[in-house]
Length: 241
Ligand SMILES: Cc1ncc(COP(=O)(O)O)c(C=O)c1O
Image 1 (cartoon, rainbow, N blue to C red):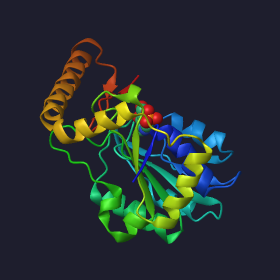
Image 2: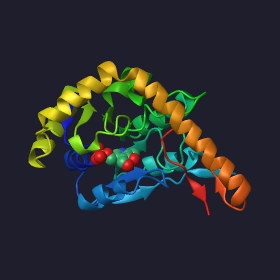
Image 3: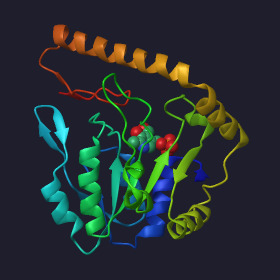
Image 4: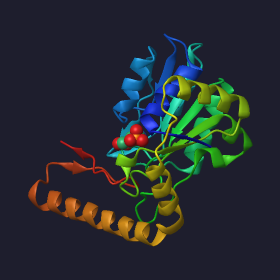
């Protein structure tokens, strides 16, 4: 595990380590806007594998992914798990299928799991790297206590890389980008959050869910032409206007 000053900084550094200018980075659109700036800044191409919108429920397009991953310049997939903004908490089956396609075509998966603690009742986060040894060694997981515990200002992210060679390459790029010097307050806050924050997190998730229901109720009564997407995870509400 490597500590860095943030997930977005880290994604840029990882792309520096794993790509060369002109390479294709697969993204499942619509997706978190900063993915695009990291890709652009590393002079790569955002290679879209658009999600399929089935009446407000978004799913991965595996046939399209198989074609895109097979392209010779496609070397990385940036996974958003859970997905910002469509709110999907990807299932084990979906993640397995995605991993099998990527590994078949030698595409490394960077799994951004920063929203993993923020899951609505009835749903469960599935960590990509935990799906088996191949998933573990052929992926990088980016995480942080910053969203869950509202400590983004303390700037600390945890990057899990099981493969030692891959970890060494990313560590080098993090140093080149000067994003591996974390501050001690961030370290203490992260330790406190993970060791002592569980009861608080349970209350938070119930509270966020109540907020979501309030938004749904308001839209249903006051703005019924707008459609609220089913959120399985994240504290975001994605409204089709
Ligand atoms: C999916 C995702 N990744 C990363 C971030 C930002 O992470 P950091 O502040 O650690 O760069 C966000 C913030 O909105 C996000 O939604």
